[in-house]
Length: 144
Image (cartoon, rainbow, N blue to C red; front, side):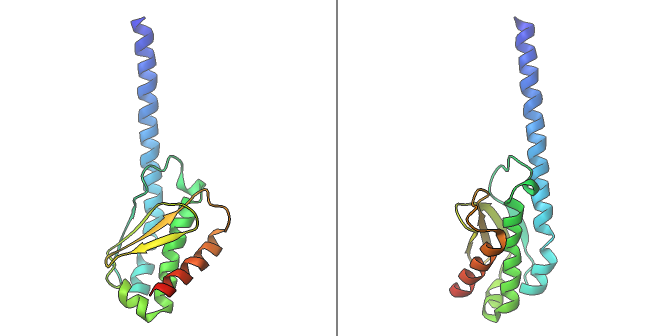
């Protein structure tokens, strides 16, 4: 009986360690994908920002879902709007942090003086990433 319990406990612990290692790898991948935009944001927005995933556990490889695509689409839209709008670029100069998190529906954003957060919904299928970027661009320009 004790041997069976220890065997099951060992399996559970092994699974937990593997899941934790996988989650760390998933977090590392999305961080790498976001960090690829650092120079582009610096050049377009004149802002030296740090990127961070704040959406909690990913549970899956973000490169095998739409999460990386939607998150980096938000960042790419930020770069585009900085290049297009002098007024927005003036505000964006104050940014210190760009984050992504889980949300509902189409690609969204919130912006404070020093942080812009993009909300992404991996299950939203009404519009592709390109259409969501166009909608986001319009929202940002209308608000600034």
